[in-house]
Image 1 (cartoon, rainbow, N blue to C red):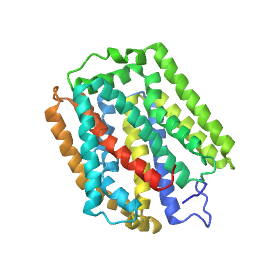
Image 2: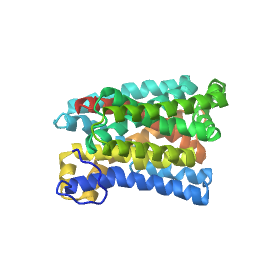
Image 3: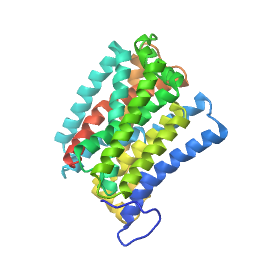
Image 4: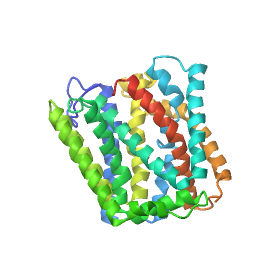
Length: 349
């Protein structure tokens, strides 16, 4: 499905599926982030406790569930039923990668936190390529270099811009996560949080943004989708500069990243895609919710086990927030492998 964004203009090529996908993957995310940024500008940032609320909501709405159908994703991509073989492959992947990364948190939590940032940087950038390539006319991202730069630039916005704009909040999050494992010394991260480190990080982001736009402009045959790309890059940069990181990520994770991945899955699932063709976006999302529920509950059980295992038991909102992020980190590692295989299968690279 490749169609240029044309706002509310109706054309013969704009099918019910196109309109549903536009509302879900573009209009909804744009509105969610824009309203959040506007609210912060008008009313100021809410208390830290209130900023944690979107994370709590993301446990059941879009956030955690967006990766809860990985056991079905690859069978859908290969046009096969979800056989025991597929369940064993994906389940084994989650077991091996998830357990290995969990062990790193217990042995070297500061390093594990750094790995979490890098994995998320890649994955959230990775999640931006498919919407631009498959849901919008992809003429400005024709080469691997252009798509790789998109991954690096897009992923840097939620992971690096908050470090530059809100270093103390970023450090607070890091301290909460590694503190679950009895480590409170973040001296190894001091160079990152220093003025020089943040200036270097800001320069890196600026370089990536300029490079991705320059390559896209050079390689592109048209300018409409390049304009969409630059518009989103500027919008996301402003969003992460304005909104404190806990709230910014709390909204971005379920309402932007997860929703765009769910859109991709709805198009893979023939039953959900048929509902989109009929203009039944709610029905497609309801089907996804039913399919995601078992593994979402399973993930919560894993998080419960993690709560019992960490040296510093989470007893307040900040502790539960930290536990949730560590749990998300653990399940993200194998999820990235699944999405990478999906990208390769669909010819993204």
